[in-house]
Image (cartoon, rainbow, N blue to C red):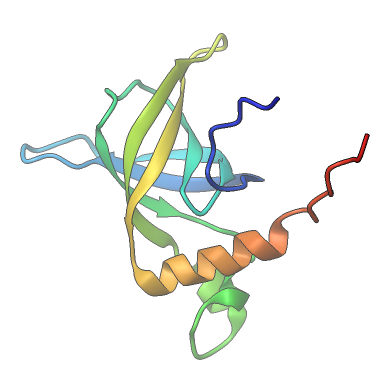
Length: 135
């Protein structure tokens, strides 16, 4: 029996993003980092510091290859260069042995056209599902 609680399939990806805590006081400059995977529901982020659970982050993700799934005019390369901008909430924090932190970030708000493009991108990148074996 699987203990998998994830609602959406994750796509392994090593890509860059910038993120910044949303707050009413003057915060830190945006951090640049990498994310390890992405799904329709969120992503796994490498972070130089911990953020409390529930922290809201402004995210700007570089998603290589998602340009062809966007509604746009002009070359796909231009669409690929545009980041996916989203609001995310920290739902998991894990300190890494080598230093730094791993953040599970759940998307809270994504521009509808960007979400539609991300859904198409994830579906196209997902490995084909394997039917359950009949034992």
